[in-house]
Amino acid sequence: MSQTETQNNLVPIAILIDELRNDDIQTRINSIKKLATIALVLGAERTRTELIPFLTDTVYDEDEVLLELAEQLKDFTVLVGGNEYVYCLLAPLETLATVEETIVRDKAVETLIHLEQFHSPADLEKHFVPMVKRLSSGEWFTSRTSASGLYSAVYPRLAAPLQAELAQAYRLLCVDDTPMVRRAAAMRLGDLVSVMNLEDARTGMLPMLNAVSQDDQDSVRLLAMGCAVSFSAVLPIDDTQAHVIPTICAASEDKSWRVRCMLADNIVKLQHNVGPKMTMDHLVNVYEKLLNDSEAEVKSNAVGKMKDFCTALPVDKREVIIMNQIFPAVKALVQEANMHVKTTLASQVMGLAPLLGKQNIIDHLIPIFLAQLRDENPDVRLNVICNLESVNSVIGVQQLSVNLLPAIVELSEDKKWRVRLAIIEYVPLLAGQLGLPMFNDDEITSLCMNRLLDNVYTVREAAVNSIKSLVAKFGIEWAKKNVLPKMIELSTDSNYLHRMICLLSILRIGEVCDADVIRSHLLTILVKMSADKVPNVRFKTAQILAKLGSKMDNETIQSVINGTLNRLKDDLDVDVAHFALQAMRDLKLC
Image 1 (tube, rainbow, N blue to C red):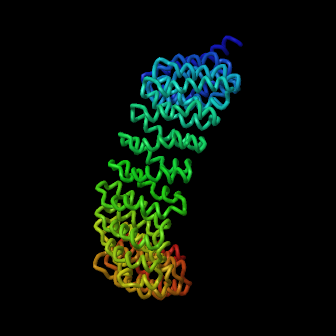
Image 2: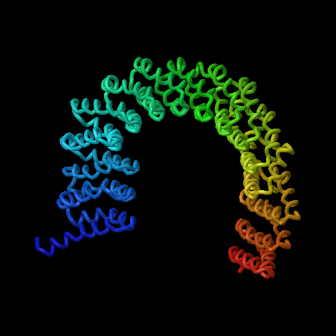
Image 3: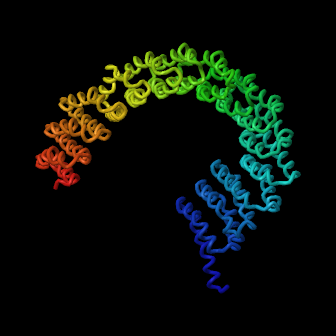
């Protein structure tokens, strides 16, 4: 290589050094982002011998720079010469895995796990495993916490003697003097168990479940629940009964609410893994305790699993268990002071309906449902309304309507606009469930029409969309009797916002009606409103005439629409004139 070529090849490293010394952190981050380009210029050999050692020795920068470095090294396998040399990347990542900032260490571990797959078995044994051992025995807790994340990645590819060595090293992490290390080991214990063979998991790691579950730090004990899920997924029934179930039962009475909260989070996964017999013998009682817990956070998490837990119960015993052990807690939770618990319950309790007989729903579930509909918290009422379908599917329209309709009418006037919105959005579904005879009730029909005058635009708009759905569902004869008279009334309302919502209603109704209905009913209202005193109403009329006119025959356009738009295009208000002229162009009238 000539002297000039050598000097040119030195330039990238020199530039990188200068940029990494820059006081501006963004400049240093940008320099790290260019590492791949620099490596391409240097070539694989010089990247291995010069760039990677330089990066290893430079790990002292700001966290943001180190984080970017850990991310960039993930794609360096090709740049160092392929899988044969991927071990070269371990040195800087090992250093990054020991820094103080957690997010940097986590990114370094993530990159190491990604690069593990490119190592040959020989390189794993020669380079990767020694690195894991060094991190596991590092003086600072940071290296030992990082080490715990690497075991599950490398363990399955090793020979039995090395697997035994790593298992022993991991057990030491689980009982480390530093709580942060024990926490990291407990967090990853389930990952390691899932890649072990059954015998190694039973003899080597099962004792660690007890160690984690009995740790003096609740931040470690709470992670035992995730470990219990992993062990219950791989252990035979006898071992699960002997080791996992006692851990679960003890956690339900743990002095720390955080541990009980984590148990509630994992109760359905545990139920799936341990099977119906252990669920009946143990988990039902555990779940009942969680529902009756003294801490609102625990109850909320338990309630959030109610539908899934009850659905997974043995079918032949399900209804009895729900009524005898779950429902007493549910009835108490309806009066719960904590709003989060109540709102979660409202979203879950209706899901029990398909699991119960009709009589139990009428006698026990409906009273709860009605109490929640009248709860002072609007989110409770909202969640109940959104889950009514599950009740109706079991007990039928007639029984539901007797209890439901009065509550629906009452809620349609709720002070909270989100509740009114939920009600009006639910009306088309309700109409489909109750059918035309029930929905023709004056009270229910007026509920829908009255929301057109709501003081919140979002509710008015939802009412318009609901009316459109109802017209499409029940047909024009129903609309002539129940909807069009209201449109005529609104078209002359003293409040111009009500007249505007009338126009929007006409547009939406027109989208689901045929040309005859538009011509004989809707255009008549529009022509009258084209002379409104408010310019906004007039130009909106012009826009709607253009949209509905596209569905009309040429004779109607010429005889009805053309004259109206001609008058509006000469309106004194420039906006009205503009939109009228635009409408005429859309309909090809000029």
